Amino acid sequence: MASGEMRTAPGRAETSMKRGPKQDYLRGRLPLDWISAAARLPGRSLHAGLVIWILRGLRNSRVIALSNTESRRFGLDRNAKYRALVWLERAGLVKVERKLGRAPVVTILDCREDA
Image (cartoon, rainbow, N blue to C red):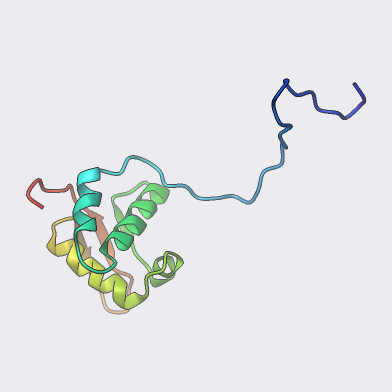
């Protein structure tokens, strides 16, 4: 074997040790009852719900500030985000604290069985 060559098992492709740019991943378990309740709501409620769960995993907290910048990253404009938060709140999936000029602070609630 020549210097610098990588040895591979028969039938296996040679793999590179290089890593790409750092990527974020969805962490933790998503409760299917919560997700299915959000999916039955109008508009982009499911989209907003998934953004909330992604941020929950990244920040390791059930309470997150949902900025317009983070929402736009997932295809939610500010109006769709606010409507979706109202629907998620009415369904009992989140609690939202709103302050003028600030990102809404969202607390993820446990899904009710009757939702």
